[in-house]
Length: 408
Image (tube, rainbow, N blue to C red; front, side, top):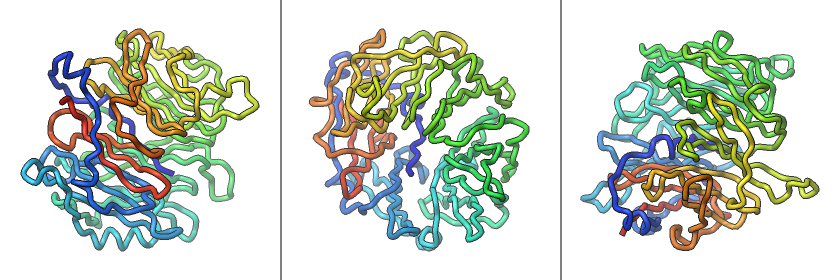
């Protein structure tokens, strides 16, 4: 399973453009010129920052067998090389990936501007381990012996970096859809939170900071929902009711689902956040799986409108597609300060530009290249123009495509 960390709306960079340029914005497929011969059977495709420049680099994690992965690391050649990517060999990392790794995540742990890796591994005992691999500043990864994580219970298979306590150091969340105790029963804590101590280590603070949670977690959407300046957590569930954890301002979370979320029981596939009505608080857009027999069989996505201080109500839009959808990404693609939507549907990607007041227009034909079905997207700035470009996993062969944003 691939988990894409949502940051495309929240981390969009400022760029001053004219109204005419905004209307001309579109994406160009430059894959064949800058990313020749990418691997097939990719399970993770990420735009990351690996060296001293500010341009996004690429990591493609592909599957070589049932339990074997391989990472292709590509460094951005910059303007001098016409943004062509060069492959960086990582023999030690790939030897470890070949031995059996569940998941790879990325984050700048030591605040040097270059991202490290965390690998989630599974031992023969069924327990999971986490390993941090450091970046040498040139996209080659290695381990430090002093970095150690305690073993995790069975079922944790995803990791996510986020600064929970506001100290500018990235902390670590671990989640899984069915986390078990040693005797095979559902664990009371289906997520675990490790705080970065700013001295080169992480400490498990789960029981101090998190409430117990039911099994079934599929995705976390982390943003400030109650306008107190600290991150809160919307938890999407594959089965059962989604949940909302509110930060008390000091990093301790309370489950406020009952009084702040509507009573909705769906199979939530993905979720992203943005301020759709421009009222100063963050709303949500969910994509869900539907059974053919349900009365809502054509409703594959809907909004949760934030009515103030993190209280949400369901809001349905006639502008959204009525076909199965697996992912949603929110960004300001045309730089007009109104959120746009990219939805990955069963027929291919679709882009809806925001018109304000919860209205959207499908502009796929003129803004996106013709594409096969896309499984996942990652966002970053390839060319240094302060606009978000897109790396995707595409088609039955699960290979990579790279699109850059253009205003010409």
